[in-house]
Length: 466
Picture 1 (cartoon, rainbow, N blue to C red):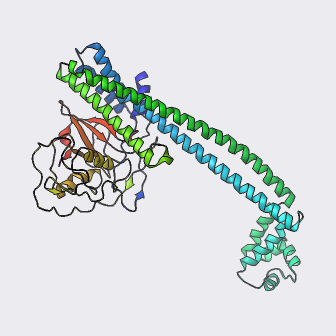
Picture 2: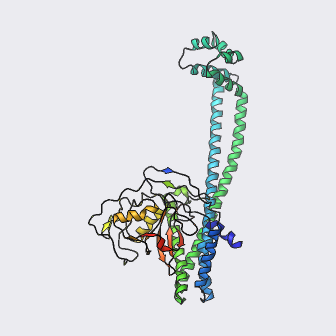
């Protein structure tokens, strides 16, 4: 049970769909699993992965094995839990700020009402009957431009304004009137108070709202401090992870078995992917300081973006599809290239066509970092393989480091299923000896951007190479 609690904050998200951003998009609501809920399948997968790691470390010096396991625990449990705690804290801060603003807006409105009433009192005195004045005004207005004397005679058989107002307030006049003005007037009269009472009521409202505003401002300040504390805790864990990764890299030469070396490589790679997430978060906070680096994720992941179909790729100039599997990563295709490896890349507007935090944006970013070609309009996650073929990319079922891994719509993976409308796309970071692949991936359902995962049965998916 302790392990279950430990994993709770970091495991229970489902993949948010990945979509192509267009000039105008429509948000839709889909059913997604709350981020804090851990399914039995997810829990069992974590148990299995930990057991597999232990098995690979069999016979390794106990101190070094403990270092590897400790780094894996940081990657898989502690950092995701801290990230989730930060996200929840930032959401509480946003809510507290919103409530405080709403109350302050109401307080400002009440103060304006008080000032307006005081101005009226100064002009016409505290005993002036605003109710009668508003009844006459509403009645006249409801008869759309009719002459006032004609209206008075027609509706109430009145010959003077005072007689008209008096009759409008009587049951007989309400019965005779065929216009809505009388009903509206009655409502105004029934809720009206004399100016003195109204002024006192507004002052009482201001006092109540001021007290509420002070309370909510204090709550917002407390939430801000809590978010800051969570941010520092996450940074501390990530700094700890970086130091552990550096220490592990310096000692990997002491690992004699291939399985132990692979285990260390996988754990180190996961830590590196989390470091990428920290860099992306910092870059996002710099680009939009108002967010304070807040992640737009929650117990209910952000709704996916519905996108138009990807534009058809332009004809490939010069022909010649890519072939072979001998490229090294990083590749030799400059970031933003429109033509590379003998075909058009489809890169026309950079990554701006992909929505924030979605899997398509991360695939674009990571491929660019690795010097591999990538297009601006590859479509939703499931569309990347076909888009790649049309442009001339090599696409097959063989994983390679740096390849875009394509998940079909509704495809069952391990303990999750790719979105039935959009599918999913990720980037292969490592091909393991057991046939599994370590991937980095985006998606609003994850606590970090990017996120790391190990996927098995690698040949069941398509890969876009170069």
